[in-house]
Image (cartoon, rainbow, N blue to C red; front, side):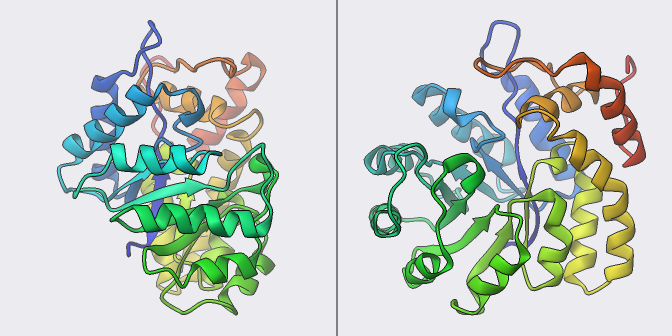
Length: 296
């Protein structure tokens, strides 16, 4: 399976609150040109909770058409309903998909046994690899290393996006799974040490804004060139910080709009990026080597 920088792609909307497919093409082409290793569609950063089911299905299909085999595409099909996740996964089924990604069920707080059965049910129902996504800061439920290890034995489950930001958690999982089980960080702040400790890459928010820098940093880390990787990571850390001063994806959509790649519309209940942070974001973007649009 692929390694490096996997970008959790934003979903562009137009002024009438529709998915902006012209901008979507611009974004996919941009990431291919910039060296992003894979795209994750309709995840948290892609505003999956506010996508209509029909939009969700069309969005993934359109990305596959635009990508046309030039970059791996992972479809976010998670839900706090096991059966809705199965149904959505089947609805977007396509041989061109690299994998599915399903988040730990949110709000209903399943037990570890419930998490195990949730993912086993999905994995049994699909014909493409499944990536699990543990982000207790959003879901409340935390999938523990022992549960991940149980699920890792399923032939269709190839890895986990681990977004606790805890390197000790990575080590705990590594001690329980086979070497070929894929481990992605879901936390830009700790992506570098995560890879240095044996992780396979990061599913990144910051990579929407600085894709070449993030991909280069990841590759250097994978190649064991720690000093060079850290030099890039140091320039990215102020950007990482600014991208989370408000709830993701509020800041990142504003930043991508500042690059001239799309408009910055966001759906309720999320609201536009607060003006008090605009100059700080621009400074962080410039510090990371990001080229802003002509009006910025």
